[in-house]
Image 1 (cartoon, rainbow, N blue to C red):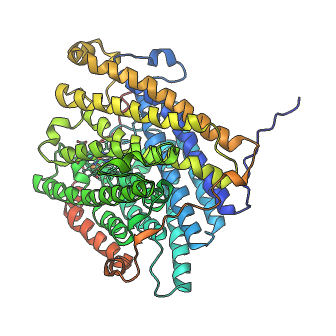
Image 2: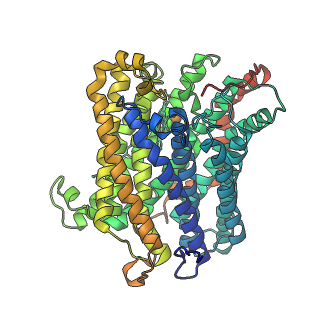
Image 3: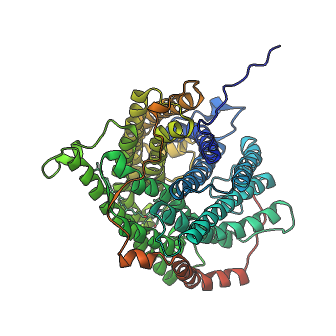
Length: 560
Ligand code: HAS
Ligand code: CU
């Protein structure tokens, strides 16, 4: 029997870093495609509609679906996208090739780790959600696979630092180009941020192999949130980088300030990590004054996003006016809304405004009591990572896949429709979730549709529940359109270099780094990294010391 061969994805210029970036990104989108399928099921659950009994025997229960949804979307897709973008952009900007052997090592580690972790997830042996709180205990393959997957990002850190060092040697005294600066600070932030997860993984792996009888739930949660807060900036900063580096040009304008953009990334390096207790306000065993310190630092870490709001909005205004927009707000209509990449960023940023405001509510020590562990929280983060970050990635794929393969975008109209529908679906869903969480205290991570008692108790919010079902359907259609567009683009045979962007659309800037004392100050990246380490030691050291010296190990449990 003849074996049908699949169309080969090949890369038209022969630049190996293009192939690397394409494979990383497409693996990420493949993970997102599977993870996203479970999204509507979560939305239907909060609409009182339980489809899980129909999915047996393939998927066993709601918690298995929720674990797949969270792990594939929030951990796998985001990291792979970062490994594609935050290596490829500096390579292109500096005109240097990363160490390709190591680049492929990182790809195979990510793929191998992902496959190893996927087996127990698919077999319902690791339905511990993406937070894997102890004492819930998964199969060892989940922890080992996840650890290998995350460690592959350490190879990416090395790739970028090595390229940067090579460039600096050849260009002594020069200011690092902007995209590279962003990538360097981003990866250093991630190095510092990921240490909590690495230490936690050591405990969990030892536990799952039976080398230790139990682990301390509070210590595990604290190590998790040490990484778990900054990981949200690990997701966000590739989107911000693309917004700073490519969006102004794609919209027809220029970035207003290069030095201010550098300041943003230094502030993220400083303040991303020492804030994790804002996820643990309700946890016992951490004194309130430590929680208060983390509240204050959380307010600090909102500042770079507020600067970003200003810088990006001002750059968009420059673009809109250059396109002929007049008057106070006329520039908004003059932006290229019919460019699917620009559209994705504009809608994503619009969603990020209420998402950020909700974040401030979460971070306020006392207000948090009202919203913690309710569906308000998934409402918050679907605006942040589900809308802005994902839309920035989707929008970027519309030019990046053609750029990497030489194959023009297919079905541009569908691409535009997918972004509108994604935005509308997310907006309806998050609106309903915020309301249901804040007013009706409906719990998050809860299989309410499978519980008649819960449905009776929450019947007052049935109008909002209907919105969840509607949004689930809209998002499913949006996802089908999007994945059709990108996979049809990548897998087609037609290649037409005249219809694709040959170069990364690096923006020009108005206020340049040369002669700016701010740019010189931010250039001392290792100094700022040192300050970030000190801040972390101050904000976490005493508490972690106390936890490590007073451990209360408990055995594992399987509640699903
Ligand atoms: Fe958050 C929980 C606080 C940002 C993700 N967050 C979560 C969880 C996730 C998450 C996944 O303090 C749940 C974790 C879990 O499973 O338990 N978050 C914040 C704060 C911010 C914040 C203060 N979060 C994010 C980002 C995320 C994310 C970003 C993902 C990418 N969050 C919290 C807290 C909790 C929490 C508590 C724990 C709650 C609990 O009780 O468990 C800030 O960084 C937000 C700053 C953002 C802004 C907005 C700036 C606006 C911009 C848009 C400009 C618009 C333009 C558009 C340019 C201040 C940049 C122009 C458009 C035209 C058309 C002209
Ligand atoms: Cu956080």
